[in-house]
Image (tube, rainbow, N blue to C red; front, side, top):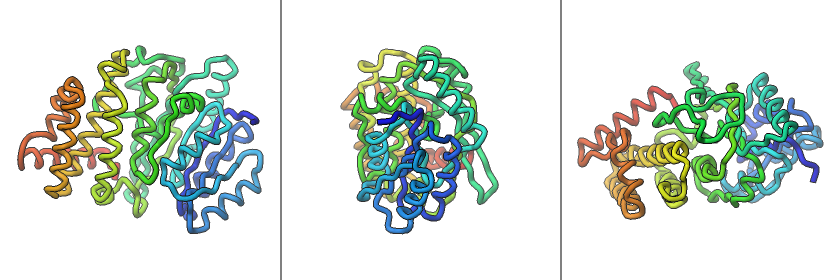
Length: 341
């Protein structure tokens, strides 16, 4: 296997209308980059478009056609087949910014040349919402020092609610294989597992303060729209439960900065699950959320107390109608501020 510097996996499902922009944005990486397009059982012209790029750029683009298994399955396929030292996911409706991409590749190459291969490499991302001409940059300079190899002990701050998303992360490929990361199939929101479960195994990090990833918001049917998330609450909960089960954070995670960050991440995901149930105004969903919080309590009291009496946990778990009202208001305030859906 001819090793590349970086594998960029692009999961595609019926992506014919927008995948060109994603693919074109990463081609300037040249033959040091593997662009791995995973056609996840598409029924439109996605496969034709992917094969066209593979034929035109045989030293850069590889295509895998597979039966539909969902985003997690496509990422798993990417990990299994990647030829790059590093691994990154680019969704087919997003893209990389040209100048940031050049700096990103240069920095990765320098790390390899100087025998400083890190486990996780972080860059900024930008929410792009063209329908209202809105951009919002998510920058990690408040959390991490930039331009040097660091460990978790070098975190500058732990800001509650400020989480590292898939768009920010590049992993060392072999790390993902060593921990046997397998995302569930036919399940949405597995990107949270992708950026949560490897964290205790990450020892060396690097943060480059460039706005690499452009995250498109506003496509019809997108999985993060509010009504879609409510319909898929059970899938959100499945991811939430797996995060709870992944680690005993007070026993398995010894480094205090990392533990605090992971506790905050788990609290935020649980708060999102809770708020979505309250927004739905469905008593069946209220019962699901009660079971979720009870599950945390029974599994690990320390984690439960941290989450339940954290600033966000308190806001969404007041009993009865008052608590649901506060939860909904907090959710919509965050939505308005971040404009994430």
